[in-house]
Length: 220
Ligand SMILES: Nc1ncnc2c1ncn2[C@@H]1O[C@H](COP(=O)(O)OP(=O)(O)OP(=O)(O)O)[C@@H](O)[C@H]1O
Ligand SMILES: [Mg+2]
Image (cartoon, rainbow, N blue to C red):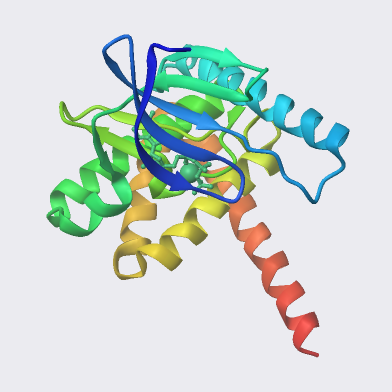
């Protein structure tokens, strides 16, 4: 792949390495899954291959659901990497703290609409943190990082997806987590409808109660 020139290492996560690169004179993102020496080699290859294929599949499903995601240009199961469109923009994680209350509320509503579209189509993201949401320079909101996602329609699984997002807001954006989650759920309700949203809010409360019960048991 001579046409590929790595420009910058952006992130070395536990599971994948993200680099900015130039590919046929276009800026792209390379997400590669490196060998984990502590895993049995055959199992390691199977896991990396599965994730390399699985993530683009879900990104494609999300696109079909009407949720903007980076376009996948190449899936390379020999080198265990994906080449995808580079979204020029900002992480929502950083944006939320600098926006006005009204702008933040509008962005959260948009987040809710996109999560609603995913769930309506049967896609669970699995890691709805604000670092996995990018707002491009034209104001278009993208979801990325579908490595933990799945195709699922169950209320419980959808509830967990939202519950984890709520928890993420409480730890990363505690000052406005409550308001933001309300705005997110009103965007969600716009897509999924009021009755379903009431049901899922009930489910989330149940999941939270379960969590508290487990914590209390641990303390005893
Ligand atoms: N297509 C893209 N365009 C622009 N930036 C991207 C793109 N993909 C990833 N990034 C940047 O790299 C970061 C890490 O990417 P991603 O979340 O896919 O990897 P990850 O290793 O699974 O991360 P984590 O484990 O932290 O969730 C993103 O938060 C984003 O800032
Ligand atoms: Mg991520």
